[in-house]
Image 1 (cartoon, rainbow, N blue to C red):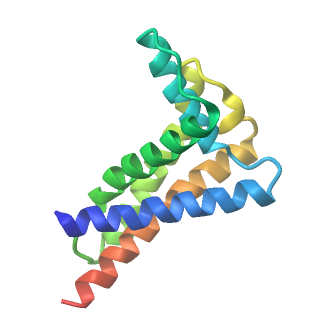
Image 2 (cartoon, rainbow, N blue to C red; image 1 turned 45 degrees about the vertical axis):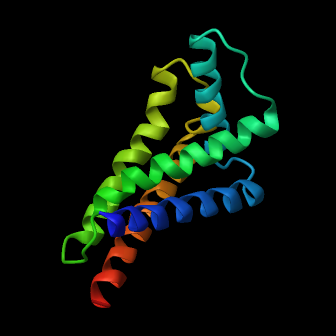
Amino acid sequence: MVRALLNGLVGSLALTAAHQLLRRFVSDAPRLDNLGMESIEKVYAAVGKEPPSDGVLFKNALVSDIVGNALFYSQVGSRGGAGTIAKGVSLGLTMGAGASTLPALLGMSKDNSQKSTRQAAMTIGLYVLGGIAAACAAQCCSKSE
């Protein structure tokens, strides 16, 4: 279980690092950080509280994204094998499709992950990258035993 969580963390960190780089160099890159902050603001509003300041809000969104994505990617498992990469891709496609379609359905801004077809494709690609990274971590760990 610990190894599966570590594999998930590798995937989550790969996704986060790739997103941070992409948003700095590509003008229409997905803004998953803004999506996370908007989600947190909605939770605060739902319970009638004032959300934290922008800096704290960003850090909270970043930490919650890393933890949540690590838990999700941990489903890739702790052992490598023939289907591990396919499982990572499948997890990434599932999460990416959700991130690029659900926000608008939940009353959130489309501008963060589905403003254009290109942005939606980049969103899905980032999550697939995270799934592949988690699967590669599982493959590497299983070979060392």
